[in-house]
Image (cartoon, rainbow, N blue to C red; front, side, top):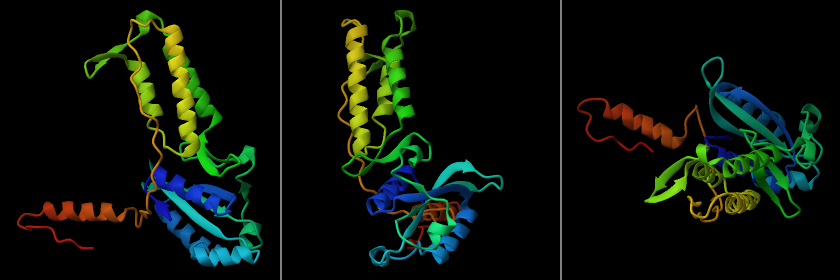
Length: 258
């Protein structure tokens, strides 16, 4: 299935891992290429079979497979939107294990990354979840230490709701609390925010701008499937249809074609 946004894509990969699909292959193509890949994998590996059928196959020792893609903003050479795809496979015998060069989600050296390479899917002994990569986490650490230790002549102040705040620190907190709220991500954001507050108390004067209070990073809510077909979701097709009709004089109300 092709997904329109990062959160849905990450949720489906997490779900696949929870359901024992711990081997994977990845690639990048365009919209038409993904359509061809979908048909190819469905015919060869049964990626479009129902969950019940896949479960029965796993019980019989066969490998089951699923394919997920995400529509990117970047475009390929032919002008189409690019697509990152992930083929996930369970343990067992089957054509897919012979044809594809599969990596193991459980191997620390081959962890599955998000499209922007900032997050990784890991099992922490409890279940599968997404977290910041070590590189992304350390980049946050370096940035917050640098901001807290800025000399007075390089500090920038802004006013938020009538209260003086530090501009760079607030931008950093905004970004931290915009991270997708998967379980392990929430834990990391909490640690980073606490580290920033410790640095602030140690390095900044109590008479100067203080950090704004933030509520904890909320859990990412489950998002239902919103498949991309012919480059658009159903909601996008409806909006395009509405705009097309509203641009025509004398059309009146736009009919609701569902």
